[in-house]
Image: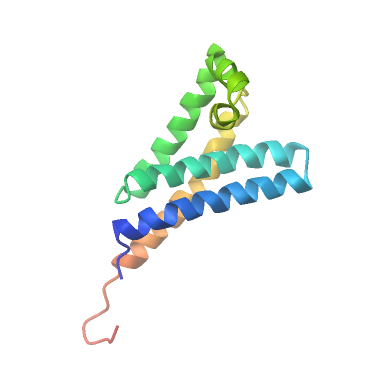
Amino acid sequence: MSITARTVRLLMPVAALLFLGLALLVRVVDDGALRQHSGTALYASMVWAGVLFLWPRMAPVPAGTIAVVFCWVVECAQLTGVPAELAARSLVARLALGVRFDPVDLAWYPAGVVPLVVLHHLMRARSRVVPAAGSRA
């Protein structure tokens, strides 16, 4: 059974909401490093869901690469001060763009995407398995 592009488009907002919910749950139960780093990784997971929402037929590695590179670009843009200026005016900008550069975040973005790329690859491989001749599917 192949997963259609329409199904992916329906599932990705649900996945993004689940990642957001998990991030908010972590914020409630922890205020230390777990809170900071899991939020960064889950932000990247939401970006991955956004990439697949926009391009539902994209292969796992390119989708993951785009998500991580997007996160890195946003993080590096924080060096300019523009995101901080926008964040001072808008909560949405603050949540989407962050405020200050943290080089540790550059490592946490792939941590939030790589497991999803592996899962995506496994799901695609499973949906392409063709039953052997003579077997009932």
